[in-house]
Image (tube, rainbow over all chains, first blue to last red; front, top):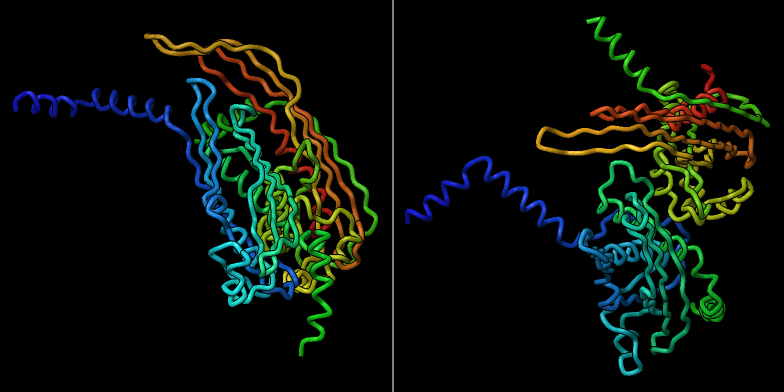
Length: 226
Length: 219
């Protein structure tokens, strides 16, 4: 009892508290830097395509993150979680691009045609992160991150037939390093890369040859409908 | 009280490095009337692979113009880009005045631009870079205290060009540029004293003043 009392009283000394705080700060420096990407993604200003789009985000896409392991003891590991932000960006983007968007819980397959058909989707889009490259502050010395993402998009017919499969790249760089923490800088770079991915997809979707072909084949059918 | 003011101003003058500034302008079409309630948007070019026009610089020029003539409404760059997403992103932004025609064919874009009453679009292209540096500095810490000793110097170059597009006539109406070079110093005898050349700030003021002359009836 007396020992524990002395111990408790001892830590109340300001010097001990300082040592404790410093110790905690040093230990914190050894942990991984974690960034959950958050940002504002604007509604696109576009003529909506007369398509009911089904969208399926697989778990890997929804929970996407990248991990950079420290190469020596003086550095920290990095975990950058982009899944929630990219899902949010695509939700907003696709909602502004297509007449109607339906979120699907499963991929279209021949044995599940009825389920997708009931949902009423004309086509189903499945985005994937194909590749991601980055440079972090220890490579660039200043708090300027660069992120390069290659997205792969697959477009399915409601019966599960693959209509198109293509890739698009996006790039983001921390716009300003002034007054930025490393975490803030990587967040900004990721948001810029996601905005770029959205812009590239929005303005080039109808130019993808297979998509263009599908849309042209669909137009006469639409005209025939009452 | 007055003495301390003089001391502060004097210290700031001493602590500012030297800068040399050059401005140039070509006006093809003078504005025929005051802006009225029409707006101006200032945007940075970011499509080059090796540099990007700094958003801070764009904000500085916009602030400079509005601070000296509050009748001029300058739409903040990010607000404009968000309102017209995805048409003014680095990879999608129009590169020639004729490209505005393509934008105006998209009905929601045309409606937004009409709502914002955009009369002039200013594209600023350039950046501030650090050039040669020299000198060395050593800092140390010991039981008796801490301190630095040495001398460092470096240069900064700012090069910016502003191109003004008339949104109604879909044409380039003026082109302005500014080049600023400066040398900063950092002597250290125990305490390092930075003497920074305000290169980017001078470029901002120079380009801001030129744009004011074009847009404002007061200048």
